[in-house]
Image 1 (cartoon, helix red, strand yellow):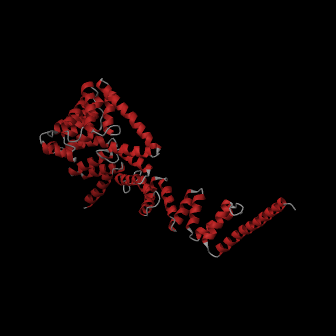
Image 2 (cartoon, one colour):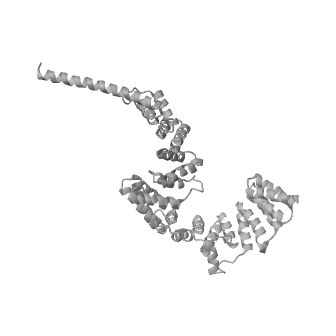
Image 3 (cartoon, one colour):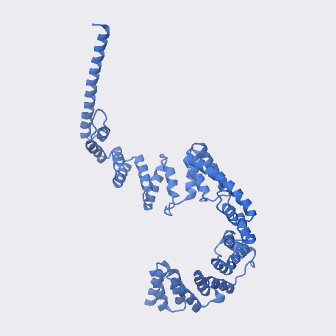
Length: 446
């Protein structure tokens, strides 16, 4: 027999022996795992089920058998078995249930997946998502801290978990650890004005640039968008000087939202004022009123009057409010009067004049403001007049107006009418009116 033939037969024998060994091994694998599973070894139940599910160890794929073993592992509190079932089931509720079991058996990955599942379900589940992420974040698990921040800035997040400052702190901390999606998220919070800072724009661009430079493409897109916006802003400024009202408004808006240039309400107001004063644009007069800060009462009154005179009758309400000092709750408003008590004297009669001008031109809020002025202002206090105007409001199915009309009647000791309008306000879903009904019942039963 030639040397070549000898080598051929020797190799063939080795292959035959190896195949026999492997067959024995795989057969032994299935038998061994099955036996161990039967003896309560849940790891073996899972491993055998996994092998059947994926066709491993020379076992033919057999999904029903696979799921039987994996289910047994899950029922035996083997977390990985429950987690696997959560991943392969198409039913969301079953998936959630299996992940919940796995999480309770100590699988942090399943807890994390629950956080994601609840995050992407209807808003009432956001608190559950937040809870899972928060617990995992304390253990420094995976991207759970990012999950905490992400859930807490969602528009539909409940008040008890919504927290932009906390989210920003988390994003900035993760960004420092080279999580470049978190860099982008931090930039976005500054960019959208969710967290106020004198350097909001600069900080947002810093974080966008950092995310872009490290391969996060959304950061690059915002940087490019900002460059184009800045060019447009410079063009707006030039065209505003040439008489373009539209460009004055766009330049003002850029200063107002702080995304193209650093936020500056004084500069925004100056552009609206320019369009109002130089180009006689009524809407810009109204915008100037809203943009001048609360303490700048002189300019607020000036542009409210101009807008009202230019037939923006909603602005007449603003004039009346200023004459009645309706913004006394604002600290900067009170400081303005502290520094100059005579800056804008209260004048209820002038307020009534402008409220009347508003309602005579279709602004129903003028009726409400007039009624409340007669009810609350000592200088013009008149319950009969207050009731007259508030009844107009209430008759337009305004629950708020019905509530105050009830209060007016109660102040005049007319409890019967007070109850009638409190009930009407309550029927219109005004909670104050419903409370008034309860109070009046107690009062009438004494």
